[in-house]
Every structure is written in C-alpha cells, then in structure tokens.
Image 1 (cartoon, rainbow, N blue to C red):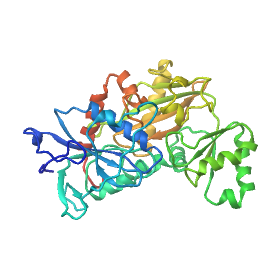
Image 2 (cartoon, one colour; image 1 turned 135 degrees about the horizontal axis):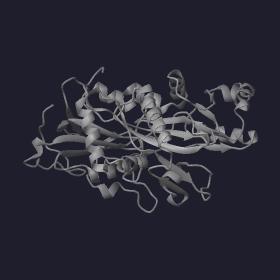
Image 3 (cartoon, rainbow, N blue to C red; image 1 turned 90 degrees about the vertical axis):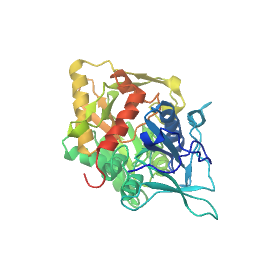
Image 4 (cartoon, rainbow, N blue to C red; image 1 turned 90 degrees about the horizontal axis):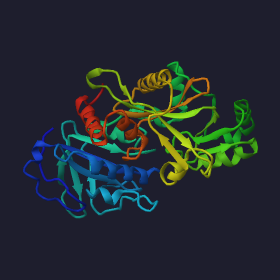
Length: 391
C-alpha cells in the first residue's frame, strides 16, 4: 500500500505531511465504539497513542462515537485518559470518516456536509482498540476484511467465538480443554420455559455466576448465593445481552496469562502469569467492572503470580492451547482458575484485552521482558506480516 495525502494531527486539522512521513508505517488507531465499554476503549487508545514509537509510525486516530459515527479524533493521549474516575467519550462531528471497500484501495475518505469527499490517508495497518459488541466480536473485523485492510488482532471467527461465552466453551470442550460446569439461558427460554431453565441450573450448585453471554469487562455479572436471587441476576444480565450464561463457582485462584502470536508461523508465546486478588472491600465480592477500572484499592494485581514452576508451565501451555483452539491472532488474554490441587481450569479468552499501560495484558508482558512500546510494535509487525483475505 502506498502513502499519499495529508494525515490529521488533531481533530479537524489536515496539516502537510512531515518530510519523513513517507518512510513511516501509517497506523490507524481505532477506538471508542457502540458498546458499554466505550470509555475503556478510549482510555486504551490514549495509552497506545502516548507510547507508540513516533519515529517509526505515523498515527491516524479515528474515534467511533457511542452512536457508531466514525470521526477524525485528536492525537492527544492525555485527552483520552481516565481522569477523576471518569472515562472520556468520542464526540460527534459533522465530518465522517469512510473506509474503502474496494480491493487494492487503502485510502480513507472524509465526508463533510456539502463538500466533495476528500482523501484522508492511505493506511498500512489498523489497530482496533475496541472492546465488547460492535468492535471485539468480529463485526469491525469483518468490515476491515471487506476493506482488504491489515489489522491487529484476531479475525472474524476467533473474535466472534471469543465474545460469545456459550460458543467459546463449546470450542474449548471440543478441543479437550478443561472447563467448569455451566448452563445457557437462550432468548425466550427464561420467559416461556423458566421451570426447565431452573432445572438445568440447579445441578451447578451454589454460589453461581450469572453473566451476559456476549459482554466484556464483567458488565452485568452477578454472584448468586441463593436461587431466590436468580431472577434479579438474570434480568441484570439481560440488560446487556438477551442470551445469558450461568457458571458454577470454581474454588481456586484467578490467574491470567497474556498470549502473543508467533512470528513466521511459530507457535504463540505466553507471558508469565499474573494473579488477581480481590480484597474484602470490593462492593460485589468479585472482580467486576467497577473493580477493574475505577476501584483500584479493592484489587491487587500480582505479576508474576506466586505459583510453583510446574504450574506456571501448565498455565502457559493451556493459555497457548486456548489461543490456538479459537484460531486467535495477534494477542489474547486467557483467564484460568488454579484449584487448590493445582488443576488449571479455563475460564475465558479475551481477544482484545484491556491495553492501557496499567492493564494486566501489558503488565504481564512487561514482567516477561517486553515493554509497553515494544509490545505495541510487535503487535503492529505481526499484523503487517500476515496476508489479507483467507489465511
């Protein structure tokens, strides 16, 4: 893909390219989006903008508003950071950004009211820092595939499987990975066949965790200690997704492992594992959305996790197998439980994990010898290395 035309340095501005711009790889940092995790995506983008190697990469920030409009965004890392416990939001604009859908056309275009569409920039690679539905679930990945664009992270199927905890567990089971007991409440079943649903859930025992099947960052998750609490928990989950998954509690430590795709067809690489320790102060008694992003005092993140060497190796091997099971690419965070008997049980895979400098994924790689800027560089290089289309 070739370079031409100016790049935006900040919202609403199209200055002339710098003399060395042609030598740089042009990266679209795509963030925001329509999901409930909009603010976390924005914070992640701020972190990446602040750490990316500007001598090597030319950044084109594109935000997606909560309504789904694509706009030129400000290249100002501090503007997108979480401040005073509040996440920023991508503002709406009169100017929209449009992707090309013709093979061989890498040019982004800008639409302004009453004006002829103008070229914005040719793009080498897209870094979609989107979490949740309409971003992490294969939808944006499908759009980028139609645009014949190279992009960071998993493709359509792996992204979709990684977003849907129901099908994720089916794939894990099919690949012989260890998973915990669960039940699924499909749309309509709770309203029309509730007695059958409850019968399928009762054998799971208590406590239970009730989750939206396709929401991330622990949104809409409830812990249920009595079946009397089940209806309220299901309704809370259904605010985020008509399909709900109910999981048996697993007694064990919550361990995470960061996985990075392999270069040149090599196997994926696993970081040292990290551990989440939820303190008694957490409001809801588990690692929920608020604890993850806004209540740092209630959560301790330990990396590397204090585990015996043989358990670390087992966690790393299962994390890589999990990555391979769904056909993930680029990056994923695999969350597991380690039981008191040192059994490793897979909880889930996250194909676009939180990626701020303080998120567990970069922290685990940092503890494994790969710094945040180096990690950004490696992910972009992995995306540039792979072909577009079927692979």
